[in-house]
Image (cartoon, one colour):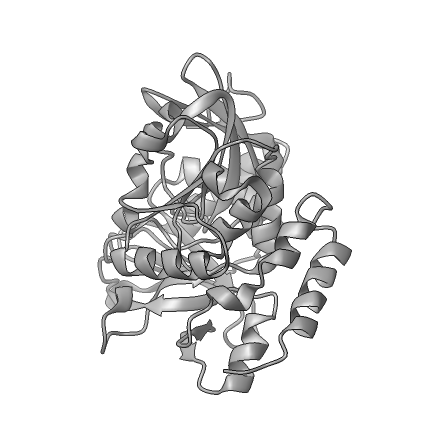
Length: 362
């Protein structure tokens, strides 16, 4: 594919700068590492499903838009259902996370989830290749990323392994950044981070699709910090959810109006709160037919479909009633925002808290 990519690349860097997402410290790295070098020929646009990109013009248009790009489906297997299994993150999110990592010259970084290699190359451009290690669970992706990173002029340590275990042989690190979501922060990451270092990772729960948490690692082997916004990433492969139990539509029963308080129930603050109070319950929302709706299910056969006009419940649980009771408690607790929540990770596990590590939310 041939294209004068320079104007597109310059426009993307300028747009990120103008938005405030790309600070001066990271601008030279983004200017030096064009995104298209790390995007394979076969890509998909994520809509309701993964839609293959079939023309050169569409390829270039997608690459230099501020959107995520699916770079692998079905773990690279052919004739699958075309489910996204690897992607190149949207540039705004890449810039936001690298900024939140608060790196300084000479610091060493471990990246969990190499993917296409763009993020690792940006880190290498900023810190020097010798200070960057990136681990990828998919051997094919790891090999491809190592090649394109090298072709771009960088040589971080690209290794194949399960990022849940970090990368012990390169430890300790000043920073660990994950580009896949995890349900629990592996304690191996804490152990492999220097005291005073940072861990930045998207944490995913059942009720909520993803929140970015930044943890300070102490000398006592405990990491603690607050959530710093939403972040939707593909799950670590070892943490992909199991298939849901089927919902018996024959158990459907109508239960009044939804009276949807969407302004808070669809927010990340409530999602974090409800995730602790309703373990195992999944929430989604959208406008498939122009009307705002919410859907709840518990993976074990109970579900609820909610609009402003009506509520339908299925299975043994009354999930909408449970969710509205938790919402009432959330409002009574001051409707905390995502920055009011935090996480502490110790050898004994992880604990979600509200406003202070001394007030666990469970």
